[in-house]
Image (cartoon, rainbow, N blue to C red; front, side, top):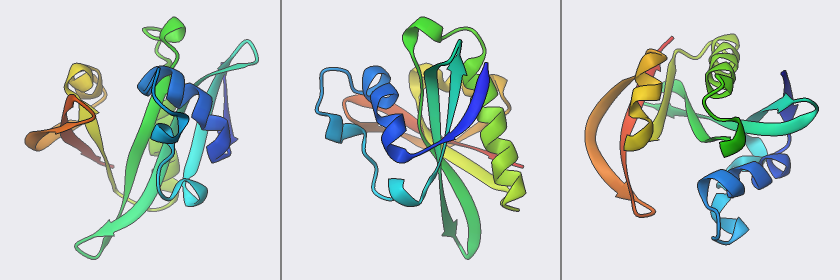
Length: 138
């Protein structure tokens, strides 16, 4: 297993295969991708997972939003998503940002809770799925 920094374009095939299969590739391109930090995880030299950090501010404080975390189905349940999130949290700390947040699919809430994230606010619908905001103060 190897972690490496990626370009936005390098994340698109994994994002597409996992998050929006059968939909247009454009569905996985995020406004601000060019300025975001993208990290990938490889297994046996093949890219199998990705995650992206988008820096912003809320109430005058800098924060980082995780977007488009995706691990190929064939490599899920092996701890790779947790490794990616841990490395992305390390990157967040290096940037001296303490709030790490994202929109979590309800089906993944348990995974994120095991990693120490807490849900907040009310659930909402996006792309025919139910989500909740989750965060961790680092």
